[in-house]
Length: 61
Image (cartoon, rainbow, N blue to C red):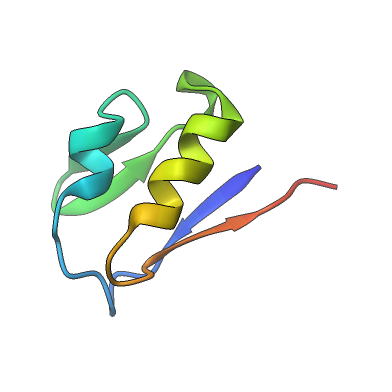
């Protein structure tokens, strides 16, 4: 699973960082994502809650 972040549409609502801070962190003004730090279902739930749609999932092949 890959999670992509589109900084051009991000509203910086903080839903991702507030919900799964072990996966989503801000480093040097950019969102850092480590999908190895939580179960895929938990990550999917947070991505679905992104109010701007800036987070998307691409399944690994």
